[in-house]
Length: 245
Image (cartoon, rainbow, N blue to C red; front, side):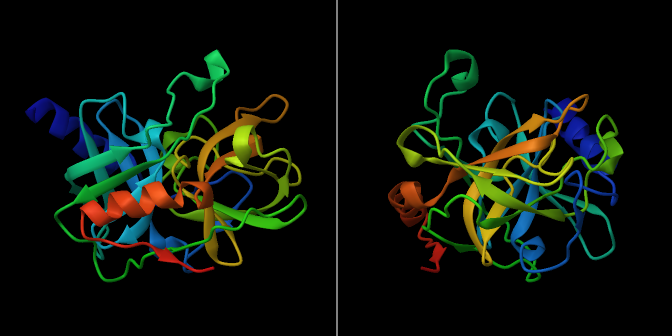
């Protein structure tokens, strides 16, 4: 256990205040104040969306497949803070090998913890809308700004993309794309995909532009179709989500 905790502390220390989201810009707006990070003992780095002072919504693959996970942010002095989850709920429709098996998967998870986030973090507004092709969507996260450079994680950045279709099986997915090399990269999974300030999807996957590992299609799981699961799970923890629609 001590070795696991040390590894997480080392990972948190290596997540520097550099950049995130390839082709994006640093963002200190409302989405930044509604987003944190999730670190895994297998050196995994993800983003997450704040739903309550002690609950975040992220991608299911961010909180599975490792022995330990921590909610992470930096305090006002820049020191890393690691919060131990007290409970988590992985969507029952999540299929970890969905891509290989070509199966339907709902890549969402909720993480509950006892230690509350600082007051500077605010719950995100969730939206049930399914934006149509061509609609603008903002994707945000703490992931890589430059591929292959782990230290370019740690600062929240956003990129303005546009919705493309199809939505996938049962209209559960949101697909988006920007101009040139732009979009989510490693570490941005679990981050927000927002339309008009409302988080309508959680980033789950991104594809590559020619010769690169990221920067083409950014895919997310729509939260609207999963509203009943989100609300039921939060109710077990005596919490509610902020739905703005």
